[in-house]
Length: 192
Length: 192
DNA sequence: CCCTTTTAATCAAAGGTTTGATAATCAGAC
DNA sequence: GTCTGATTATCAAACCTTTGATTAAAAGGG
Image (cartoon, rainbow over all chains, first blue to last red; front, side):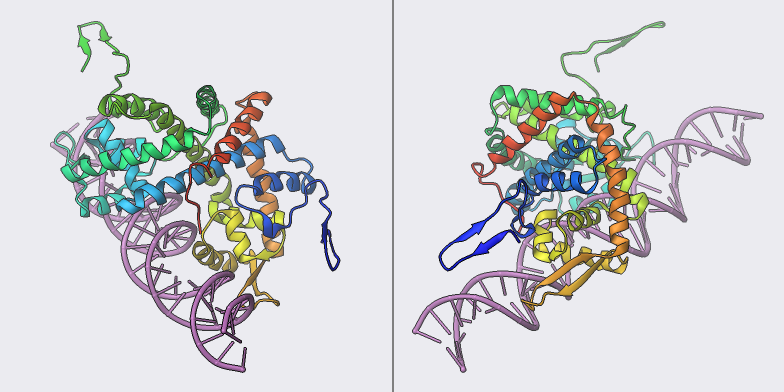
């Protein structure tokens, strides 16, 4: 276990990258995992692994913070926020479009709309030109919810963004855009 | 609607940032949303908004691709993968630690373990030193699943990472780390 | 040693997601 | 016009997540 105990001192021998699993955190695990995977599986693409693991965990932490500190206290879930956010900025639109721009499948949106409609935030109406289609729009309450919710949301975004210099933020966005631009090459699978 | 039709041509007048909502995609909505929010709410911190929106959507796309193209076809969900991935690299450990490093609450892990145990991928055992605690470990099947699953996962990570130059990947990871380092300043809320 | 507090895990209810099926409507071919 | 195939929305089952109890065991103070 790399530790030697005497009556008065504890000597810990840290070998390159040891860190007892019980001291790992969600974030420090990234480093640990990449090193361990390289030992375990020499053929691993460690740079790619580190990049994607770091990206997914960072996003997870930011989103968890926004949802739990801003939206849940106001009675909204993260997906619920995404939907009324889209309706706020893009205006009334067909459900199909809402699903696309808020990043969920048509089936997931269907279920989510039951809650949003019950809570009086949105209205479902049959489209006039196509009787299959649904037209979605915000109610007054929905408009109020997104206005207040987004203000608080954006304040929290500011707090996060303050960790980077303005030029770093710009470079960061550029890199994310470049990464996504390559998604077609990577033949990535997208939502229905 | 900014478009004029003649018998032989269609002239589209693109005013700075118009784009009918029905043509928006999950990704192009980022740009649209930031511009629209600036009009709608002049006090918005647009840089922070763009940064966090871009981050969350990029991560969502990458994760959706990995889950739907790699893990679901192999019978694993994304959270299920995260758990056996952690057990693979950090070795047998207490459930509390597994929850922390795989990024879920203890309650969520409890539910997830029912599935993983039923599928024969992990074993739950009572810890000897503390009869409240659970000791988790991979079964042979679990080990096989993560080995094959991670190889495919890492190949897909490589495909994504190929969009950036090596130095860009490094800078990208540096920026993500800096962003997370600031999370304490931002007083972010973390999972239980 | 007993009592209180803390900690580990689970349960319960409500909600959101996935995949795969079903019902209704539209669009194009004949 | 009618039939066939595509499109829109919903449903159903299985699963994961959240918050807020509850149960059981350990830790600490008197």
